[in-house]
Structures are given as C-alpha cells and as structure tokens.
Length: 73
Image 1 (cartoon, rainbow, N blue to C red):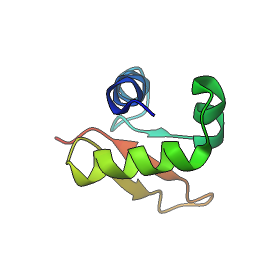
Image 2 (cartoon, one colour):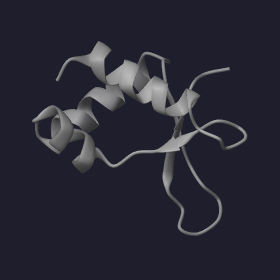
Image 3 (spheres, rainbow, N blue to C red):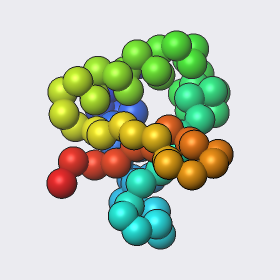
Image 4 (cartoon, helix red, strand yellow):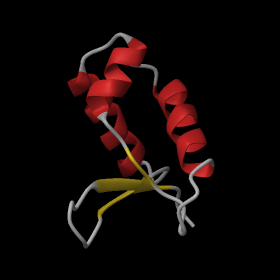
C-alpha cells in the first residue's frame, strides 16, 4: 500500500467534506477494494499516518460512534 497515495486520497476526502469541523469516516474495506489491496494493509497504513502526526483519529460521541479522521490543526 503506497502511503502517499492513500494520504492524498484521505486528505482530499477530508478537505472536500462539508462537515464542520472537517472530517471523514472511512471504510477500509471500500478503500482496499479501490486500490486492490487487503483491508489490513489500509488499516496498517492509516495507523502509520496517525503515528507520524499526519492524521488525527477520534470517535464521534453520538451514535453511531463512527471512527473519524481529521487533518491536524
């Protein structure tokens, strides 16, 4: 899984979001299908981006409590 390609895709999804503050909920299965890789590879790469500080991950406080991704401020 190419980390930079995934980062660009996620970054574009967040920037184009109409939500305030800007965030997106991701389906690793759908992303894996688009890139033709395993969903575990997408999850691993997303975790690397979080550890590097390029993405922030949190959970929505209200149901359905999706895990969401944001760009650092």
